[in-house]
Image (cartoon, rainbow, N blue to C red; front, side, top):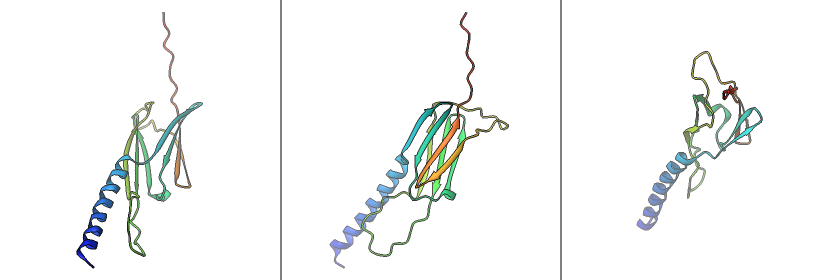
Length: 130
């Protein structure tokens, strides 16, 4: 292999690593929508298995943690960009109690690489104006 091909391959590996780091920082794509009495959070996590995804809510922060193993290539790798891990905090527009006995009763569904999380919005109390 010539020095030019070697340098091109090494440069591609370096760009691959930097690209993956960038996408791990900005991903995943997330939508947060209020539907009736629920907050619906849609998270794109293609390539991650359901068993490798962990969601947690503390206060008004949603923690998304997902990890997967790097698949061994069969042929020559020219470009890799898919993240191997996601470790992201998302600020929610509502807050939940942080007490141990008060748990957020959300439900999550995983289908075709998309997690849909439905969280009941806590009741608010009206403040009378006198």
